[in-house]
Length: 231
Image (cartoon, rainbow, N blue to C red; front, side, top):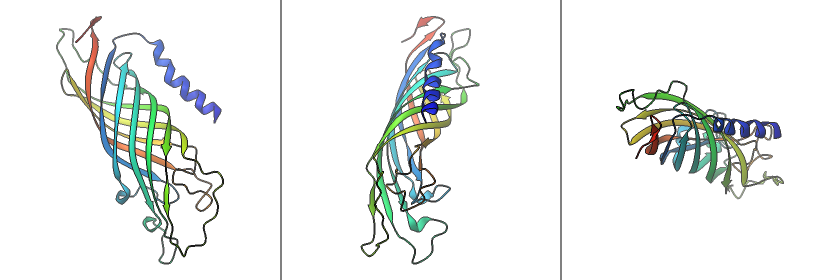
């Protein structure tokens, strides 16, 4: 665990050693949240998709590397009856949870090109990107358990705050000089089985995951073109 955290921290810091064309941008995110755990099937159930919103601030060290800070808020839900192996008469627990996440990411855009050509004119482009980050998630899972269900066991290690590693892939499209749109899928490694508040009462051998998928509208605040600050 410590080695993984150290590796993530180093991945977040190493682009700061780079120096080239820089830009700053910020925007808003909207999409869906889902989770995979003791009360949700694998793969994710479309019926358990819920609204997610957020914000992003990105600082480019050059056209291919950026440091990104994000905040996300979303609702996740789970229901035993959505599991592929559910049988009538089996457990019928339900869960809902609100997640607030803050994280920092290192982002790589391998095929990115400068936004401006040698003549200084803007050039739109479509570029894939990937990122890895480190953050914290704050949750409040709520379980709905039938009154007649007496199989529930005490969960001694239940918690509501988690270290998370976001792993994201997406596409960015530079619309014009001022705005960019990104579409991304990001899964979160939580290193815990308690995102849904259930572990011993489910499968304690596997950890929970959750995702944020959606679109961001980004505004380019400032950029350096040919060594001179723009805007």
